[in-house]
Structure formats: C-alpha cells, structure tokens
Length: 621
Image 1: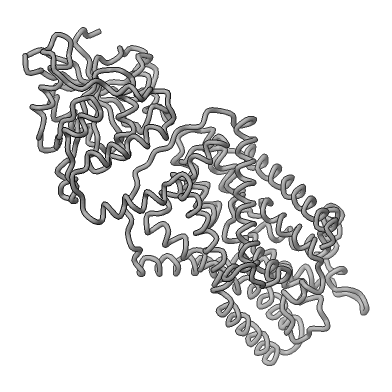
Image 2: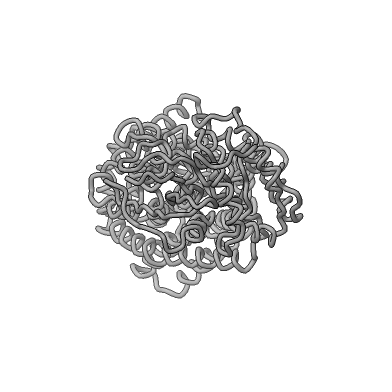
C-alpha cells in the first residue's frame, strides 16, 4: 500500500468534482474497483509546491453521510476509515458548487465536523457570477474555519492557490495561521441543524445577487419553513379541492345536458329494442356517467401541472421528507407517490429511482393508496349525491372539504401502512434524502395546455375503450336472460345472480345489491364502478323510460347515507385496478408481492368501510 499522503476529493453530485480531479492529476490516474464492491476507485498523483507527491482519490458524489446507495456507502466508509483495502484520508478537498451554497455547504459542514484537515474548493464561481451572484470566499473561510479557494475546474482557474493550501495541510508542510474549526457542530447532529447553519453561512458569504435570486430565497423562506411550509402546502391542497367542485359545476352541467340530448336522439331515431337498449342503457348511461367528470379531473391536473412547472413540487417533497422519515420512508418516495395521484401505474414505475430495495418495495406496496384520478368520478358522484352543497365558511364548501378529507385519508392510510410494513415484512433503515431546488418560474401556458390536452385524451381513450367494453359486457350480463313480468331484470340476470353471492360477503359493511354487482367490473378500472351503477339503474328503472332521471337522483332514492359513506371509504383503500396489480407483478418479478398487496388492501377496505358504516348508523345518519 502506498505511503504517500492521501487526500480525498469529496462533494455533492454535479459540483464539478471529477473535472477538478482531472485538472489536478492530468494523465496520472488509475481506475480500479474497491474490494468487494462494484464501485470504481479513481486515484491519481499530484505534486505539491515543494515537490512532494501525494495521492488524490476521487470519492463517489453524495449528499450526506447517511448512505442510500453502494457508491455513497463507499464514500462514508472511506471517510471513517472502514473501507476494506483503503486507509483513512489525511485531508479532504471538499468541492462546493458556488451557485448552490445552501445545499452543498450542508454536506461540507458534516465533513468539517469529522475533524480532518479540510480545504474548500468553491467551484464554478464563473457560472455563479454569470447568474449575478457574487460571493466572498474570505467571509466564508472565516465562518467555516478552513481555507476556501475559488476555482473554475474546467478552465484550471484557482488550481495554484488550491495546491498551495494543500501543501500547508500535509504533514511536514509549512504551518499556516487559519481560524480554528467550528466546535458547535458534530458529525452525529441532525441534518436539519446542518441545513440551518448552511443557510446562515450562505447569507453571510453573499456579497450581491440578482433580484431573481433574492426572490427565490424569500419564497423559500416561507415554502421551506418548518411551520409555514406545511401550512402553505395544506392551503394549496385545500384550494385545489374546493376548485374541483366549484369551478366544474357549469361544464359538468353542459356535458350532462349533452348526454340527455344524445339519449333522446338515439331513442327517437333507433327503433325500440335490444340495440336501442345497448346504446342508451349500455354505452350512453355507462360511459356518459364517467365522461361527465372530465372537467373535475382537468381542474385537478391543472393545479398539479402548475405546481410542478413553478418549481414548488420539489419543495413539497423536501417538506414531506421529515414526515415520511417518521414512517420509515425517505423523501425519495415522495415523487413516485405524487405521481400516483394521477395513476398508480407510472407512480410504481417511478420507484426505480429509489436505490434502497426495501424503500422501493414499501413505496410500491403503498402507492395504490394515493388517490388516483380514477377514484375522482366515484368520489364526486357520491359526494354530489349525499353531501349538501353548503358553505361552511365564506368560499369554503362542505363538498370540497369532504373530498379533501378523502385524499388525506388515503395519505394517512399509506403512512400507517408504511409504518407497519417497515417494521415487519420490509424492515430496514430508511435512507436520507437530498435534492437541489430548481428556480421558481412562471409556468408557460402552452406547456400547461399541452399537458391538459394529453391527459384529457388519455381519459377519453380510457372511457372509449376499457370503460366502454366493460360497460357493454355488463349490459349483456344484465340483459340476459330476460326476466318474466313482475320480476326485476337486474336480479334475474346473470350479473344479478353473481352479485347475490357477493352481496352475502359485503352486506355486513352496508353494501347493497347494486354495489356488489359493480365491484367486479370495477376491477378493470375504478371509474367503471360509476359506469356500472349507471348501467344497472338504466336497465332496471322502468319508471324512467326516457332516461331523464340522473344517476345522482337514482342514488339518492336507493342508498342510505351510511352506505354511501362506506362506499367512499371502500374506494380509499380497495385495489380496484388490474393495471396496478399487473405493473406491481412486473416491477417485483413475481406474484408474491402483488398478491400480498391485494390481500392487505382489500382487508383494509373491508374493515374501514365496515367501521364507517356502523359508526354512521350508530350516529343516526
């Protein structure tokens, strides 16, 4: 093993660390693997000012001393002298991105707290200056207690000064007067402590900055505040769900009127009989019952797209990291779970970015609990039928509050499930979470419009294929065999007889015959439940031969409030989606975890729906 002084190059990803390593060592590099792992070891030689050679090792980039990947584990083990075949470094060069001091100084402070000699390479100062940010390396050095050298690695600027600082740090070199290392921080302190200190240092080191950067910092002081940040996030969710109801009333009315008109045209133009029933009772009643909710889905997505494009969603992920850590997950799970609000399928696929296998598996298993857009038609039609459209406060509707409560119930259910899973079948340590904050920006209307158009087409395609096909099959099962006079067509049909068997199981939780019938086709897609119920009432409503009675009116006539509330709670938890089960099977390479997921979610749905029903009955609702 080499007896040369060993200096490690450490820093966050994208700080320019590799460029600085190449600039310092040139062609004098060696690449190999650390013993026992597939992580590459990059090392090279560097001659100091007095001619002495040293060995420079480029450690894998990481955001903190809490590893979440094999690369980050190697960095930690080397720094603590625990890596097999590698000695502990004699000194550190910590590479910091000048334009992202808040994030990069957090890790630098952790490294300084280790007690090793440190020199800070304040890299990419040219890009920071280009963006209107001027920093004082002297002020930063005074606060940190270590040398701070401005560098531009790709242009080899500042390398001579950096080399001189290294000469002073290596044993036997000339001594240098420099401030004592800060003693108010230790390596085992919470990451939030380092974050607060990093923000303070960033502010002290800033000489001047553009108004845009000042605005970003001012907004972050609210959005990332430990108290005001969560309040802002909850307020945004509150406004979003209020808008889903209040802004969609008019367009929903237009679509409903269009469906009534289309039903009348078909009844007038198509002779009465089986084909007319297929078109009116099957397709128009079933598919129309789902399409009517397109405005609400687009309003929800408009909010999500605006928050993503503005740069706020990453801040929300950072806020949620602290809460998610309490249930054994890291903030890395936030983005996949957020994607699951649109659909659990892309959300589960997005878990590929989670390096820790136990973290990833837990996120996959709880992703279906996020309230996807397919649940929205179910929620809104039941809320619209049974929850009064009254104002709790000026501008605050009861229906919007109930919808927000259902979304929160799904999130809380996911957190409880994660807490249980992380202590049982997916037990393990949660990994840390760091990310760079993008700049705030005004969303482009064209981007939002394109995003909404693509989601509208996806929803309508789904309505025109999966929902239409399922509705037609259900209509056939409801229409045959024909019931004798005086008997209910739904009860006498094939579908009705199947539902009678299911009803025995779900009756204790308040579900009626129509709900039992709708649960099976709803496995194709959750919103099919609405289409199925609409088709059932269209087939079995002889008093409504012209199709004038809406599905909401039928629900109000046939369901009790406890049944409606139990039905809502069922859909908070139930895994009513074949696509989600299929993608879980693909991502976990087998049927073990998909079957486990289906089992625990159906059990949770049954228990929570039953509790909701009996509490509502006991309360006299």
